[in-house]
Length: 256
Length: 256
Image (cartoon, rainbow over all chains, first blue to last red; front, side, top):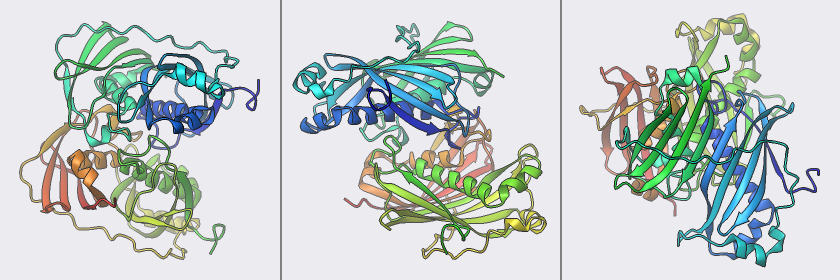
């Protein structure tokens, strides 16, 4: 299948200066943001755009995100995000990604689960019903690229005391009026020291999102060490204990 | 003068989804980052690139930045950053900007003062001497675009007690190993409430930078209200009182 006949979206980027982190590779924030942008663009291009215009105003919210990177492209390197829809179940849709370089390097892959919710009601909209009404939304005829997709990990923390309390501030909030899904990744990775981040590379991040958080709300971060030096779970909760999101972070020794 | 014969750099962007803030306009962070990117790109294209390769490894550091916006472009709107060098004095160079839309809308303008420092020594390199040795660096033959450039404001705070203490974390640090110049703008604007930021638009930001800050350092923010509701000064200092940067923030009522 070629670009014209399949349902895979392909979006080209370059790691621009100041979009890298201190290691000189595209920041996890910018990489995650690119995945969000591609999802939104692909959904608009492949059928959802016109369908959604008929609905009440609605927004896509991220329910799960798993990113596994062999390495991240460095400043001035280009990369292509390929994305496709793998399935629809009730209000959820599975979306997969492959991140490849112009020379064919497979940088990594990702999987995500999205829900469509009403902007006002904040309640989910059934994608299965939408699909039945609008067969043009059939995005599923895809020759899946040859890449291992990270199967979302089960994330369970055991920490009973928060290791950090943060307050959600304006720079955390996106156009949907809540703390940005990707910004949580910053807050999670900010629990680790500069020295650790220099010595070890984050290889994989799994996120599950359960409740929104809004500006000026305090959030508690709970850190569980699963395997010292390489595997951690971070739970973010409202101060009353209501879960916001959970992360599983896997480190490997840095390449050089 | 046209694009081929003058020394003005022109760089085209679009406000991509998730590069806006919660108001739906390009975030101050992304706008500031674009100015940094354009400075770096323009300096490389117009003579500094090859000259700098002969030097010890060196980096551009921002000494002052003033941005004045009539309004910020909204999601999916395009804009062009025009930038040119207005003068060189000792280790400093003045760089100006105009931000315009495809339809000629002048969104705003900016001025900045940069110094070139050694990456290891952290000491300034004389641009005047470089200029004499390398006449190809003559960037000054510019028909200045017709725009009022914000003259850097004098910034003096009076607060004696910090209103917030933050710790610089990994997500604040850029490839130069210090807290990113633009990230300070986030920290400054984060002092204001979500409600204020919805009701009032930041019209102008002036920044002066005096010392670097590094990961895990604690920083104190001192807020002085110059005119209630519209004019503020924020000083950021190391905990021993050593100044890091100062900001002057001017608000106006939001357009709609």
